[in-house]
Image (cartoon, rainbow, N blue to C red; front, side, top):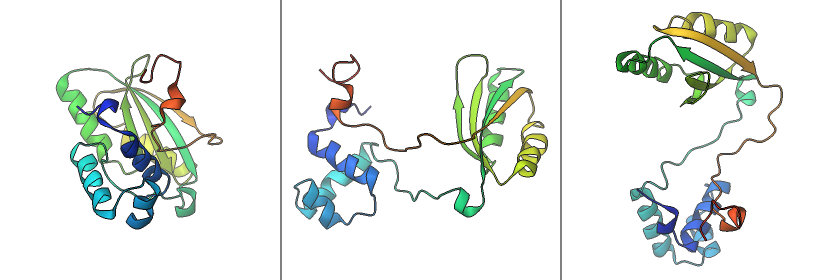
Length: 169
C-alpha cells in the first residue's frame, strides 16, 4: 500500500498542480516542479503504477448539462447477507444518477450522492429504481440547497496538518 512516506516533496507538488489543473502542459508542469520533461514522465508513470494517480478526468458542471438537483440518499437494507449486499452494489453501480455510494456507520448502511434533473426525475429515481431494489428497508432523501464546498483535491501539504496529530511529524 502506498503511504505518504512514499511520496517526496516533488511528487506532492506535482500532484497538487495536477489536482488544480490537469490540462497543464507537461512542459509547464515540469517547469513548475523543477524537473526535465523525461523526469516528469518517469514520475507520472511511477505515481500511476503505485496507484496514487488513479485516472485523469474532466469535471462537468452538472447544472450546465441539466442536472439541477443534487441529493444525498441514506439507505438501510433489511438483510446484511453477502448476496443481498452484492446485489445492492451491482444495482447501484448500474444507476447513472448515482455519483457516489459509500458504505457507512450509524443508523443507515449506505450514503448515495445523486444528481437528477428535477423533482419528477427524483421521484422516478426513488420510486422506480431505488425502492424496488431487493432487500430495501429504509430510504431517506436530503436535497442540497446550496453547495458550500466541493472539491476533488486531496490535501497534500503537510502544513495543513501540522500540530494536529494526524500529519507526518
